[in-house]
Image 1 (spheres, rainbow, N blue to C red):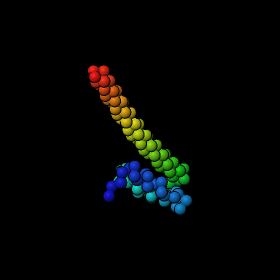
Image 2 (image 1 turned 30 degrees about the vertical axis):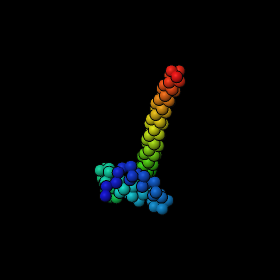
Image 3 (image 1 turned 90 degrees about the vertical axis):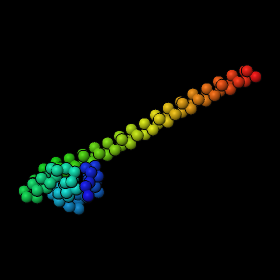
Image 4 (image 1 turned 90 degrees about the horizontal axis):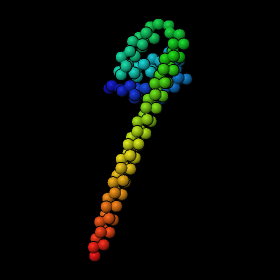
Length: 115
């Protein structure tokens, strides 16, 4: 089953860094991303087969956290855009309804004037 990059990074949110060392954490995140990010497999092999220092691992962890933050910000932006569109549509319908009401009132006034 193929994960989207969005859901894979969101799964990272549930991982607890304190329960594993940095290398295990980075490998787990990369494993989650491997279907949606081809370079993840290469990074996994590289990290598994070499001595990677903490600075590189910290940089990768920071990058994962920023990606997650960006995705959450993008989701919020999308939700706000949908609400904005909904409210604009609702406003247009209200304006149309008010215009129809005004036309009906005008028509009724004309009928009353002709009686």
